Amino acid sequence: MASTNDPFQFQEFEEAGNLLEANRDATTISIEDDDMPERQRKAAGFTPDVDDEDPHTSDDNTELLSGQKKSAPFWTFEYYQRFFDIETHHVKERIIGSMLPWPGKNFIHVHLRRSPDLYGPFWICTTLVFALAISGNFSNFLLNSDKPNQKYSPQFGKVTIAATAIFSYAWFVPLALWGCLLWRNNKIMNSVSYSFIEIVCVYGYSLAIYIPAVVLWILPFEWLRWCSIVMALCLSGSVLVMTFWPAVREDYPKVIAAIMSAIVLLNVLLAVGCKAYFFSNPEEAALSPAPSAALELTKAPSAT
Image (cartoon, rainbow, N blue to C red; front, side):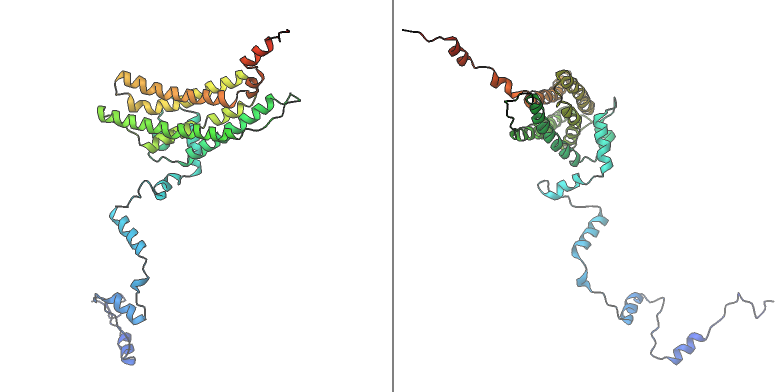
């Protein structure tokens, strides 16, 4: 038989009833009442203000919950803002990957991982533009420094030429390649396809190896310049070839040869053209006499 003082036995407490009898104006809350939160807030004096809610926040929350976030048009700054939102260590990793390509590794699949950026390519192209202009002027200054009567004047127009060449290569060549690959994918139905931003990103990072090469071109040694050009061409070209080879390998052999040859040839033309224009001695042409002047010197005045 259970004891009457069993601590586990249910007991009725009379304190609540005594409190209610003492305070008739007290508010009671029922657990089974569905309107309990609203009534409790009204009793406490807190009333929600609907006008204080931010409509933009509610719209964003609705879009996130529904999984349909609106994308900005491509002509707005909001569209390109996400391509500049990248961590510094990711940029360093991609620069190192473009300078030291691993055989058989696709730059897009290994380093970009379907998240291309424009921050790294933009600053690589900008750095290369100023490196070309400054190194070219400094190289000409060193060539003419041993001439006492020669007055050197810096050529600021080289900055414009360098910017036009580098940014045209980094934007128009990827645009043409993207259109060509898109056209061939419609013909062949290739399983590998790249977006325009991914191609621009690859071309931008492939130019990173030219920055230290251009700095070496300051030294007036032609063998050093050509060695650095060949090394930069091999590293930069291998990144491009290994990246775009999977996108064309299922095409016809002539189309593959034409596309890959165009990629390599344009890369060679950029490197050799920059070396020939920015690091040639402009005084050599000025010092060499013109053909008309040479003919006048050889003619002796006839005495009558």
